[in-house]
Image 1 (cartoon, rainbow, N blue to C red):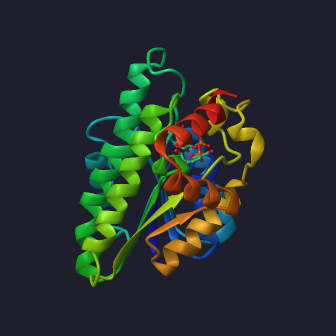
Image 2: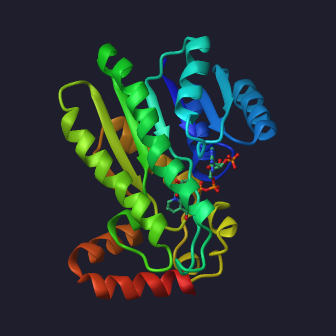
Length: 256
Ligand SMILES: NC(=O)c1ccc[n+]([C@@H]2O[C@H](COP(=O)([O-])OP(=O)(O)OC[C@H]3O[C@@H](n4cnc5c(N)ncnc54)[C@H](OP(=O)(O)O)[C@@H]3O)[C@@H](O)[C@H]2O)c1
C-alpha cells in the first residue's frame, strides 16, 4: 500500500487529490495550515476509506517547513512513496501595487518548500526503487503573465525544475510529473480577488476533474500534463505566438 504526502489538502485541488488517493487505498499524510480542517479531514478520510491518515499542520512559507515535516515523518515512521506538491496561492495585480510579503511567501511555498520537500523525500524513494512526485504548476508555467508576474514566474520554475528532474531520474523507478491546470473552481481565485476576471469566466474546470487527470498522469509516470482541451490550446498558443502577443492576451485574462 502506497503512502502519499499531499500539501494543501484543506481545499480545492489538494482536497480532491486526498479523496482520490484515499479511494485508491493509499495511506495519506495531509499537510496544510488550518489545524481544525485538517483534523476533520483526517477523521473523515479514515472513516470513509479505511486507510491510515496523518495530519501535519504546517505553514510552508516558513523557512524550515520541510525540515519540520521530515521530523514529524520520522516520528510516524511512514516511508513516503508519493509526494504531491500542491499547496499554493496567488497575489495578482500590477507589481507596483501588490503585497511584497505575500509575494515572498508565495516564492517560499511554490519554490523553496517544493524544492526542499523533494530533496528530503527523494533519497528514500530512490533507495526503495520506487517513487512518484507530482508538482502542481499552471498554464502560467508556459507564459509570462503581466499583472500576475511573480505567480507565473514561480510556476515557470515548477515546470522547469520538474522537467529537469524527470530526465535525471530515468532508470531509478522514480518519476516526476508536472500538472498544469488552468482556471479551476476552488477558493484560489476568490482569495486572490481574480474571480471576476475573464480567466475565471471563460472556461473553469472542477477540482475533482483536475485531480483525476493528475492522478492518472502520475500513475503513468508522465512528464507533464495540462488539464483540459481549452488549456492545452492555450499552452500550444503560448508556444507558437510571440511573447508580446501572449502577454497582452494574458493581461486581458487576469484584468477582466
Ligand atoms: N484554482 C486555479 O484556478 C488554479 C490554476 C492553476 C494552478 N493552480 C494551483 O493549484 C494548486 C492548488 O490550488 P487550489 O486552486 O486548490 O487553491 P485553494 O482551494 O485555495 O487551496 C490551496 C491549498 O493550499 C494550502 N496552502 C496555501 N498556503 C499555504 C501555506 N503557506 N502553507 C501550507 N499550505 C498552504 C491551503 O491550505 P491552508 O489555507 O489550510 O494552509 C489550501 O489547502 C496551487 O498550487 C495553485 O497555484 C490553481
